[in-house]
Image (cartoon, rainbow, N blue to C red; front, top):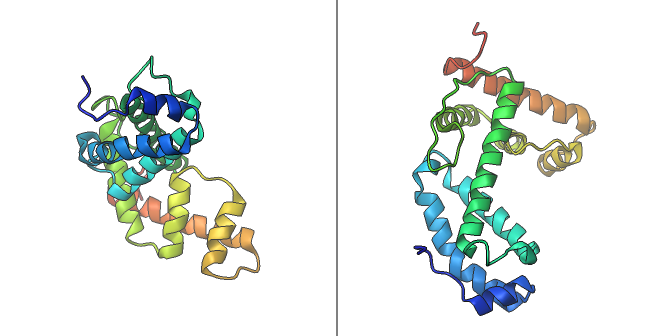
Length: 201
Protein backbone atom coordinates (compact mmCIF):
# COMPACT_ATOMS: atom_id res chain seq x y z
CA UNK A 1 0.00 0.00 0.00
CA UNK A 2 1.30 3.46 -0.89
CA UNK A 3 2.28 5.83 1.92
CA UNK A 4 1.03 8.73 -0.21
CA UNK A 5 -2.53 10.02 -0.27
CA UNK A 6 -4.11 9.00 -3.58
CA UNK A 7 -6.78 10.84 -5.59
CA UNK A 8 -10.11 9.03 -5.91
CA UNK A 9 -10.81 6.97 -9.02
CA UNK A 10 -13.54 9.45 -9.97
CA UNK A 11 -11.05 12.32 -9.75
CA UNK A 12 -8.54 10.41 -11.86
CA UNK A 13 -11.11 9.54 -14.51
CA UNK A 14 -12.05 13.21 -14.81
CA UNK A 15 -8.37 14.16 -14.71
CA UNK A 16 -7.64 11.94 -17.70
CA UNK A 17 -10.45 13.72 -19.57
CA UNK A 18 -8.72 17.05 -18.92
CA UNK A 19 -11.34 18.41 -16.53
CA UNK A 20 -9.75 21.53 -14.96
CA UNK A 21 -11.45 21.06 -11.59
CA UNK A 22 -10.26 17.45 -11.38
CA UNK A 23 -6.74 18.48 -12.44
CA UNK A 24 -6.62 21.01 -9.60
CA UNK A 25 -7.97 18.44 -7.11
CA UNK A 26 -5.47 15.77 -8.13
CA UNK A 27 -2.47 18.09 -8.06
CA UNK A 28 -3.53 19.63 -4.75
CA UNK A 29 -3.78 16.14 -3.27
CA UNK A 30 -0.41 14.77 -4.33
CA UNK A 31 1.93 17.72 -4.88
CA UNK A 32 2.68 18.66 -1.24
CA UNK A 33 3.50 15.07 -0.24
CA UNK A 34 5.65 14.40 -3.30
CA UNK A 35 7.52 17.67 -2.77
CA UNK A 36 8.27 16.69 0.85
CA UNK A 37 9.37 13.24 -0.35
CA UNK A 38 11.81 14.69 -2.88
CA UNK A 39 13.27 17.32 -0.55
CA UNK A 40 13.90 14.76 2.22
CA UNK A 41 15.09 11.99 -0.13
CA UNK A 42 18.71 11.07 0.67
CA UNK A 43 19.40 10.59 -3.03
CA UNK A 44 18.88 14.32 -3.54
CA UNK A 45 20.52 15.63 -0.37
CA UNK A 46 23.29 17.31 -2.39
CA UNK A 47 20.88 18.92 -4.86
CA UNK A 48 19.73 22.48 -3.99
CA UNK A 49 16.08 22.57 -2.90
CA UNK A 50 15.31 25.19 -5.55
CA UNK A 51 16.49 22.82 -8.30
CA UNK A 52 14.42 19.95 -6.89
CA UNK A 53 11.30 22.11 -6.76
CA UNK A 54 11.96 23.34 -10.30
CA UNK A 55 12.13 19.76 -11.60
CA UNK A 56 8.92 18.85 -9.75
CA UNK A 57 7.10 21.86 -11.20
CA UNK A 58 8.29 20.98 -14.70
CA UNK A 59 7.13 17.38 -14.32
CA UNK A 60 3.69 18.32 -13.01
CA UNK A 61 3.25 20.91 -15.75
CA UNK A 62 4.03 18.17 -18.28
CA UNK A 63 1.61 15.76 -16.59
CA UNK A 64 -1.17 18.35 -16.69
CA UNK A 65 -0.56 19.04 -20.38
CA UNK A 66 -0.82 15.33 -21.15
CA UNK A 67 -3.48 14.08 -18.74
CA UNK A 68 -4.52 11.16 -20.93
CA UNK A 69 -1.04 9.59 -20.77
CA UNK A 70 -1.64 8.43 -17.21
CA UNK A 71 -3.06 4.90 -17.05
CA UNK A 72 -4.49 4.08 -13.58
CA UNK A 73 -4.45 0.36 -14.39
CA UNK A 74 -0.64 0.38 -14.60
CA UNK A 75 0.46 2.47 -11.61
CA UNK A 76 -0.73 4.65 -8.77
CA UNK A 77 -0.73 8.32 -9.70
CA UNK A 78 2.00 9.14 -7.17
CA UNK A 79 4.17 6.29 -8.52
CA UNK A 80 3.68 7.64 -12.03
CA UNK A 81 4.69 11.16 -10.98
CA UNK A 82 7.68 10.02 -8.90
CA UNK A 83 9.05 7.90 -11.75
CA UNK A 84 8.90 10.93 -14.04
CA UNK A 85 10.65 13.08 -11.42
CA UNK A 86 13.40 10.50 -10.98
CA UNK A 87 13.96 10.32 -14.72
CA UNK A 88 14.08 14.11 -15.02
CA UNK A 89 16.66 14.28 -12.22
CA UNK A 90 18.77 11.71 -14.07
CA UNK A 91 18.41 13.71 -17.29
CA UNK A 92 19.58 16.84 -15.48
CA UNK A 93 22.60 15.02 -14.06
CA UNK A 94 23.47 13.71 -17.52
CA UNK A 95 23.28 17.24 -19.00
CA UNK A 96 25.70 18.44 -16.35
CA UNK A 97 28.04 15.49 -16.93
CA UNK A 98 28.03 16.16 -20.67
CA UNK A 99 28.86 19.82 -20.07
CA UNK A 100 31.81 18.90 -17.88
CA UNK A 101 32.99 16.24 -20.31
CA UNK A 102 32.91 18.88 -23.06
CA UNK A 103 35.06 21.09 -20.85
CA UNK A 104 37.62 18.29 -20.43
CA UNK A 105 36.81 17.79 -16.76
CA UNK A 106 37.22 14.19 -15.66
CA UNK A 107 35.15 12.89 -12.75
CA UNK A 108 36.06 9.58 -11.19
CA UNK A 109 33.52 6.94 -12.13
CA UNK A 110 31.64 5.06 -9.43
CA UNK A 111 29.04 2.33 -9.71
CA UNK A 112 27.13 3.19 -6.54
CA UNK A 113 23.39 3.42 -6.95
CA UNK A 114 21.08 4.97 -4.36
CA UNK A 115 17.33 4.45 -4.64
CA UNK A 116 17.73 3.91 -8.38
CA UNK A 117 18.11 7.64 -8.83
CA UNK A 118 21.58 8.56 -10.06
CA UNK A 119 23.68 6.05 -11.91
CA UNK A 120 26.78 7.55 -10.30
CA UNK A 121 25.73 9.26 -7.10
CA UNK A 122 29.28 10.12 -6.03
CA UNK A 123 29.82 11.83 -9.35
CA UNK A 124 26.73 13.93 -8.58
CA UNK A 125 28.29 14.97 -5.28
CA UNK A 126 31.44 16.08 -7.12
CA UNK A 127 29.37 17.89 -9.74
CA UNK A 128 27.35 19.78 -7.13
CA UNK A 129 30.52 20.86 -5.30
CA UNK A 130 32.17 21.87 -8.58
CA UNK A 131 29.27 24.09 -9.61
CA UNK A 132 29.06 25.54 -6.10
CA UNK A 133 32.71 26.63 -6.25
CA UNK A 134 32.37 28.01 -9.78
CA UNK A 135 29.13 29.86 -9.06
CA UNK A 136 30.67 31.73 -6.12
CA UNK A 137 32.92 33.57 -8.58
CA UNK A 138 30.23 34.47 -11.14
CA UNK A 139 28.16 37.62 -11.47
CA UNK A 140 24.36 37.46 -11.87
CA UNK A 141 24.47 37.29 -15.67
CA UNK A 142 27.11 34.55 -15.68
CA UNK A 143 25.08 32.55 -13.14
CA UNK A 144 22.07 32.65 -15.44
CA UNK A 145 24.24 31.49 -18.34
CA UNK A 146 25.63 28.65 -16.23
CA UNK A 147 22.09 27.60 -15.32
CA UNK A 148 21.17 27.42 -19.00
CA UNK A 149 24.35 25.53 -19.84
CA UNK A 150 23.67 23.03 -17.04
CA UNK A 151 20.18 22.45 -18.45
CA UNK A 152 21.62 21.70 -21.89
CA UNK A 153 20.32 24.87 -23.53
CA UNK A 154 21.81 25.45 -27.00
CA UNK A 155 19.65 28.22 -28.49
CA UNK A 156 21.48 31.49 -29.21
CA UNK A 157 18.13 33.28 -28.97
CA UNK A 158 17.66 32.07 -25.39
CA UNK A 159 21.10 33.23 -24.29
CA UNK A 160 20.64 36.53 -26.14
CA UNK A 161 17.34 37.16 -24.33
CA UNK A 162 19.06 36.65 -20.97
CA UNK A 163 21.93 38.92 -21.99
CA UNK A 164 19.61 41.70 -23.13
CA UNK A 165 17.68 41.45 -19.88
CA UNK A 166 20.85 42.60 -18.16
CA UNK A 167 22.27 45.04 -20.70
CA UNK A 168 22.17 46.23 -24.30
CA UNK A 169 24.42 44.28 -26.68
CA UNK A 170 25.59 45.67 -30.03
CA UNK A 171 26.85 42.24 -31.09
CA UNK A 172 24.80 39.72 -29.08
CA UNK A 173 26.32 36.59 -30.63
CA UNK A 174 29.88 37.69 -29.83
CA UNK A 175 28.96 38.73 -26.31
CA UNK A 176 27.10 35.47 -25.66
CA UNK A 177 30.17 33.50 -26.73
CA UNK A 178 32.41 35.70 -24.59
CA UNK A 179 30.27 35.17 -21.49
CA UNK A 180 30.07 31.41 -22.11
CA UNK A 181 33.85 31.29 -22.34
CA UNK A 182 34.19 33.17 -19.03
CA UNK A 183 31.85 30.64 -17.41
CA UNK A 184 33.90 27.77 -18.86
CA UNK A 185 37.11 29.26 -17.43
CA UNK A 186 35.49 29.41 -13.99
CA UNK A 187 34.42 25.78 -14.32
CA UNK A 188 37.94 24.73 -15.28
CA UNK A 189 39.41 26.74 -12.41
CA UNK A 190 37.02 25.06 -9.97
CA UNK A 191 37.88 21.64 -11.43
CA UNK A 192 41.58 22.39 -11.00
CA UNK A 193 40.97 23.43 -7.40
CA UNK A 194 39.20 20.09 -6.80
CA UNK A 195 41.92 18.23 -8.77
CA UNK A 196 39.30 16.94 -11.21
CA UNK A 197 40.84 18.25 -14.41
CA UNK A 198 42.57 15.74 -16.65
CA UNK A 199 45.63 17.85 -17.29
CA UNK A 200 46.33 20.02 -14.27
CA UNK A 201 48.82 22.82 -14.83
